[in-house]
Every structure is written in C-alpha cells, then in structure tokens.
Length: 320
Image (cartoon, rainbow, N blue to C red):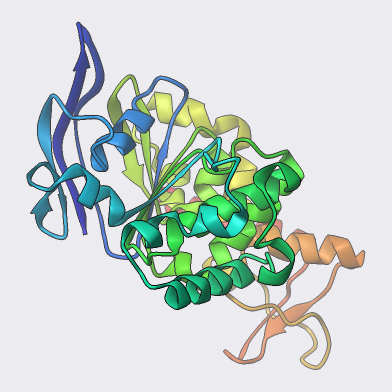
C-alpha cells in the first residue's frame, strides 16, 4: 500500500531523515515512535508532500507521489494533527464538510455524510452541527478533526500526535473510540507519537526512530522480546511490564496456565483479551477468579498468580 525507499531529508548539514525504508500493508496501522526531533513528523509530512524529500521515493498503491499533483494527493489522504486545526469561524458541520465542498459533492450528499460521521463519532448531528469549535471540549474538537479527515473515505490516513493536546483521561477515551471505529479499522494508517504506551496500543507494527534513522521496526512483542539494540532496550525498560501486559493476550499464555479445577464456575474471558484487560476486569470485581473459554473448549485456571506464572514461562520460552 505505502512503500518508502531510501527516504532522505537534509536541512543544511543536518540529516533530519537519513535514508530510511519501510512499507505499510493495506489496512495496517504503522506507528512512527520516537522523541522530539527524531524525524518522525518530517517523514509523515513527506508522504503527503507537505515537505519535499531531498532524495528517495514514496509510493502509494504503486504510484510515486512525486509524480502526482500535491493538492490532488492531499485530497486522497486523511490528515489529523495535534492542534486539530479547526476553522474557528466555521460550525462543526462546515469544518467536517470542507473537503466534500472542494470535491464538489452535492448538498444532500454532504449533509448525509456529515450526519453519518458525526453520529459514529458520538457527536449527534442535531446537537452539534451548528456549534463552533470554541463551544466544544478538547475531546469533541478532536472528534471533529477525525471526522474531517475521514469523511471523504480516504484509503490512507496520516496522524501526527493526534491525541497529544488532550488531557490524559480524555486522551485515553478518544483513543479507544478511535481504535474501535470501523472507518479506522478499514484504513491504512501511519501515526506519529512520542508516547510508547500509545504506540503499543495503536500499532500493528512500530517503527522506532532516533536521529533520523530507524532503530527497529516490528510488532510490540518483537520489541519486548527481541529488541534490536541497547538503545531500544533502554527506551522500553522502564515500562516493560506494562507493555508486556498490553501486548500479550490470554491466547499467548493459555497453554502455560494450569487446568481449571472446576468446569461450571468462574469468569469467562475471550482468548483475544489482553492480559492488561484481564487483570483489570479481575481487579474491578475484587475477585481472583478461575475462568475459561468455553467456546474454544479450553479450560484453564485464570487468576493473578497463575497469570504471572504463565508470563514467566512464556518469557522463558521466547528467550529460548
């Protein structure tokens, strides 16, 4: 879907992006992760030609973006930025409808599309269509920004620190809504963040950058169990256990859990549930349950001690 080859951007004597290469498959979510100044935002902006590369190529669906008209290219790509960039003198409806107007959709089509995307973003049309950005909360403004990026149904969406301006609680809520949206799940997306927890939650794969170079590309599990170098290892070490719980599912450790003693009680937990959410559910109930997945006919003892023991065995298995 997206192919980046030997991409390079130089400012004077500084190599902001230093001959990097990566690909993004259709419907994949790739996160560009790194500290400020590592080159991730510059990389993102070269994809939709807000910044022109010094050298290298970028292809989307086999087409070199440098051979396309920049304006036409950007109309085919959804773009979400940290400060949202809403027009303060436009209503919510007018902000979301900017691109459809440029594409010369007819009025009924625009209104229907705006109403549909607003409902999916939990912004009921009747309540919010005529409001102005200043009348919205930060989370609501971010939803409007997402709606504007998604309304023309682009195959590709680029997001630069999309949740960075929100407070931690709102940020987590909007991010979870974002991940659950069918419109997002169908997109090929590149997301920039400096937040490692966010990267591990959003990304199918993570591209970790430093000083304009790629240090490692891989899944969350590959970063945890097979860091490419000491720099990557040091970057994740302070949050390693949290990231482990977020990355591993019950299915990953199921065969390291002991057999359940009973078969007619306990909390039924889907095998696709992350260990973080399993433990969170158990904690919120104030219970240390035995549970199993009846659909898959796998009966295992699922409680705090058994999960921690299974994680230890899984890590040993991975390192071996």
